[in-house]
Image (cartoon, rainbow, N blue to C red; front, side):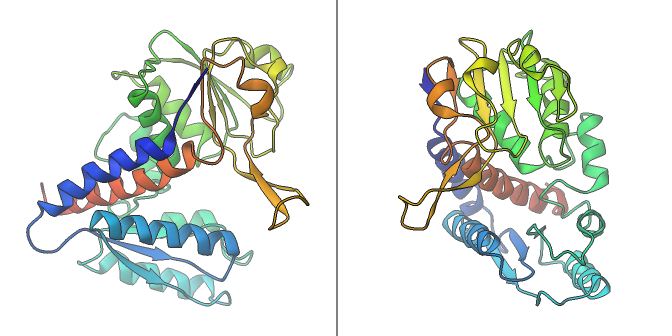
Length: 291
């Protein structure tokens, strides 16, 4: 079993981006990070993104509207950022307060600055294999993990557990593309799939993105499969100082001995998501500059 080190690969991408940004003359790429409210996980995620941007040399603009902001007020804020010539990328941290429509909010971000890859136009470009769009960061990170660890999907059966617009659907589209490293045969499974273990046991590459702690067990995995664990779940653990432990959607202790390669949680897919956000921001800067 080979452990796929997302921290190491993300650090390599950050180093490449740092060199690229250092060579840019004049204004550097800029990302606006919009965080509504004080959700503890969101606070932590935005700090991590701000820190990574600073290390690379990307300018970050942190915008903290109150949790009481209305939908029209949030739209007005995003419209101003869309029009700002000094902002290349915009990220709206989720989850948003319940009175805010998340999908409508993501669509409000200009497709040219949608470095999260959630805008309808950018999702459509993924389907059409148009590289001028932005790919959602987690699926893009998964493809980069596979590429940099020598996993070619051509001729392989890729089984995706989960059908979200953030991970499941875009990673399926990416794995299907007629491109080097892709060309996989893809099955998408979900909560309504009959006899799920029978399908997951066929996977050469199993991508777990269902959002349920330790859902994928050894009985669901073929020996030698590549297992990519996208989940990050908090599970109560009185032995921990903070009262919980982080775990993925895969039951790591039982699955790891079977797997050919596997990502840990934390330290697998998570760091890649931030690295690809920064890569998208540099891409947005270059596209807007006509480079």
